[in-house]
Image 1 (cartoon, helix red, strand yellow):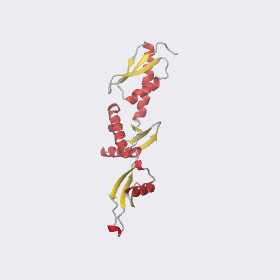
Image 2 (cartoon, helix red, strand yellow):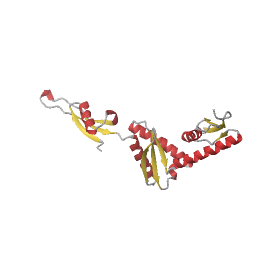
Image 3 (cartoon, helix red, strand yellow):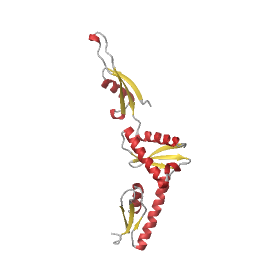
Image 4 (cartoon, helix red, strand yellow):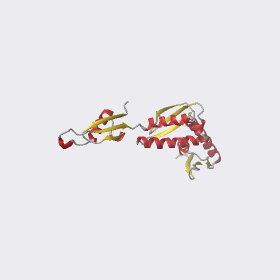
Length: 211
C-alpha cells in the first residue's frame, strides 16, 4: 500500500485534498509536508506556481509496535517473529523466538517495562489509544495459569483457616487475574492494598457465606 504521495494544487488545501483522495485516508491519519507554496503569476501575464505537498499515511499503532519490537530484538542479537491477535478491547502482541529471557527479566519486570514503552511510543507515533499487551515466549499465558492455580490454593487455605492471606506484590494485570479467578467463589472476598509497586491482593474469608 502506498504510504506517501506528492500532489499539486492551486492551494495547499487543494493539494492535500488530492493526496488524501489518492491515499484513501482522512486528515487525522496523515502527516503533511508543504514542499512548495503557491505563487501568483507576474502581473497576471504568466501562470503562477501551484502548491506542492507530500502527504504520508501514519502507521497504525499495532504495525508501529510490531516493527519497534523487531528492531529492539535485533539490537539485542535476537531473531524473533511478532504477530498480533485481537482481544476484547486490546491487542496482544506475541513475540516468539529463541533466547527471549532477556526480554522478560526477573518475574516479568523487563517485559512490563517494554510493554509500557511500546504503548507510549506507538501511541505517540500513530495517535491511537488502543491498548497493547505484550507476551514474550508465552510468558503471560503461562503466568496467568500459574496465578489461577495460586488463587485456588490460597482460597482453600483461607476457607480452612478462616483467616486472611496476603499475596506477594504483583503488577496490576496480575492482581486482576487473582480477583477475577475468585470473584465467583461465595466463601472468599478479595481486595488490593498498599502502594505501587508493592500493592498486593488480600484474600479473606466471607464469614456470612453464600447470600
